[in-house]
Image (cartoon, rainbow, N blue to C red):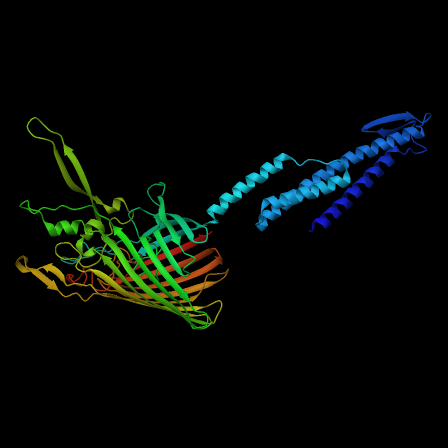
Length: 587
């Protein structure tokens, strides 16, 4: 509403109130001919009664009317002041919503107030409290402008999970010399909760924090089993990053901290729940008038195990330089990816990518120390001096079962810690440099049932022959060709709007040393030397509420002991089934 129209509307309201007040006054001062012996009339705010025998004179009636008009004028001035204050408040709120400055709105309201007061009577000075409130709002606005917009989001997932067909690798209780025993079905309830905060600083910086449930040592799952007698569940830092996008170089993106994987991948190589740490850089170039819509380059440098300097002696007391070097070697994941998106039409899109993931230093570690069921923790203590011996400092290692830290894995006889091939000394047989090829085809001919087909091939270029103990303690060299992995996936439908449905099927085959198993897909019996089928059905109860059922059938490809150890005849080698029923709420 324009200022003139607001003023005109206020004038009409005031005029109506004046007429209404005058009408009420005259109706109270009028005495009916057949009224009682005493009839009241009003002087100011008091009521006076006179006898019909002594009616008021004309001068008294005029004085009464003048007093009434003066009172009405005072009330009218107060109402005008109230109306001006309301207009100022409305203008202030409107300016805030529109993102305008406070000072002009305040000045305009003050001018309008003065104009009203000049035409209506004595001027009324604006309340100084309004100026103080205005100043405080300016300070708040300046603070928010410096921080930038902040957004909160998150999700809660409730899961019912059951296992069928599980076996262990212990000596058979029914077949002498064989391995494997049937295990009873397992049922558990699980919870995942995540809370994310995202914000911007200026036009070039983004930042984010996310906390999530999950056991601290478990890097491939944010699920928390509902167990341990109703104890409180861990809630820890899952993401913390800063992203820099310089305006002078459009398409460039630099990020550091703990974050989601910045490259295209499937869970054959790395699980969705793994949050990596370090640095990544990307540059993307778009093309408007071409079927090739963009071309993106991504690089990353991710330290994953920083170790102290090592000092290792031989049995004769001399320094073992090689073992000292290995013991002090840090581990990291470095790599790069090139990807592009091609859209020959608005109904068809194809995304192609090739990446190289190099896990540096893994060939120098003992997986049982880092990934295994037993965590070896260093311990240093001092033996006090006695009368005959000086004080001594002793350094050793204490073995702590991982099951004490990651609940739910006990008594199964299986482990998801590491399934790669080991040499006779306990070290990983192979290094891991993964060449990862991904093709994703999207067909959008149906709005409700789009089709997505995804193919993923991975090859480990650093597989090495496996060294085992042979006759008389000699080394036995076993050729290692277990370096390939395949992932094929088909999805039909989506869960974007209420009533949408999604159907999915995935088949994957991962050889023994195709990937580094502590980090890839965890919802299988073992993470390599296996093949699996996954079926998924999802239904969108609401755009932010999804119900889904997932079934995963896992088979060991080379028996209980894998391709490099002979499995005794009669051993069990049956498929296991995992059934997951999820309800996910996003906010």
